[in-house]
Amino acid sequence: MKETCVVLLLCLAFCSYPGHADPDSADGTGTEAACGNYNLKKGCVRIFDPVCGTDNVLYNNECLLCVQNLQRNTNVRIKKRGMCQEPSPRSGFTEN
Image 1 (tube, rainbow, N blue to C red):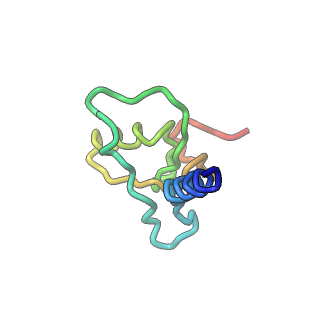
Image 2 (tube, rainbow, N blue to C red; image 1 turned 60 degrees about the vertical axis):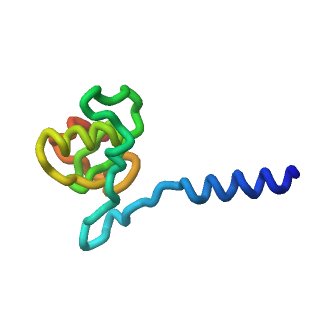
């Protein structure tokens, strides 16, 4: 029984692990943000879970990337989860 639970948990963890786009890929397509998971009209939670957009802007979380896409009528995708290596000046974040 214990082994079955461990295997199921490992399978669940493996299947739910988010994919990461290759930051050096030539096409720069990234991965689509899961905007359907958020009620964008109500706003986003204030949780810092940074994503780097394909526009090299650092977004505090995926929901905020979705809100920006909606407001600007753009389709910025997730280049990678975490900090941008060279964030755009528009992101307001600079590494010291």
